[in-house]
Image 1 (cartoon, rainbow, N blue to C red):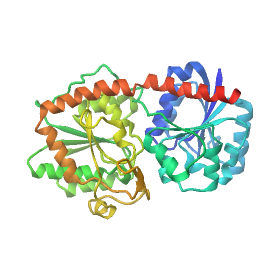
Image 2 (tube, rainbow, N blue to C red):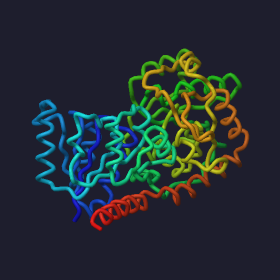
Image 3 (tube, rainbow, N blue to C red):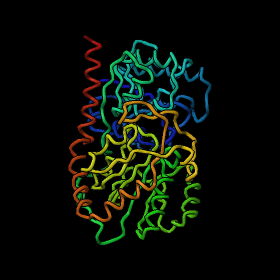
Image 4 (cartoon, rainbow, N blue to C red):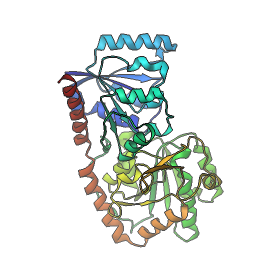
Length: 404
């Protein structure tokens, strides 16, 4: 069996961390590889650690031993010991180019072939020669969206080949669901999912709910996730007088997200930047149409007008801040798929979002068709087992090319 060493950061629970856990839990990787995970920094989020403990994947924490933080010099010795003892056939760097600094060159400057999986980290990473060397020395760069591949090309222009491999729906999302949703018999429910941080653009949805209320459309907004912007969003809901319509559910375990998607009618992804939001394909898998911002890789998750709609962002960041957002964590540039270029970030206009929601509210037949299409198309395009087999095939091809 092949031995594969994964290098990543697992301090927070997000899309790319969850996707890695799904990969390591999959039957394909459980049966074909011995996997070891080297977690950067000094801790692993308890939610992720709980999942990893159920597998046979061994975990080492770079900057911690026996519950104590250790200096970089000892972390290097620890890594070299793992590398020598485990003897991996292949190293996978998982969405961590931001951690590739000159003082960490020992992570990859050796004879072991490695791949770099890009899942959005490139956007907040500044260019330097060391990172270019890292990308040029990889056997292959695997991007989770066309947007991510263009970010890499436009920022670094590496010599290494880039392959696009879209993410898949989560392993916990079930296919045996009622995929023909209807809202004629109850309150229309909108969902938003993710860490409660400014880059997700959730303040826009709160304003859209306010606009709809003022026009006589009373609906519910359900929020799945936690984060540093939670108190700010609570305050914004009260300030806009829509607090009774907004429900905060906190962090929902991955194996319970199918129930969340099944309880809502529509998912909205108003992110200012996102490489490929897996929640979009998970929601569609459960029969939820999706309205998304047409920026970065977000529109790659839908079939326009068939499973959902995309809206080009039009508000500058100062206008977004005036609506209750912040500029914390926002990138300098995002990818505009219409212009195939990097541009300053913008936010969705709540009026545009409200108009799309009204379009569905006034056309229940159109909504039901979108719901059915979403389930059927996503089930074919983004099946997780096929995705794991595709990733495994990529690993096999790289190793075969290396040995030839």
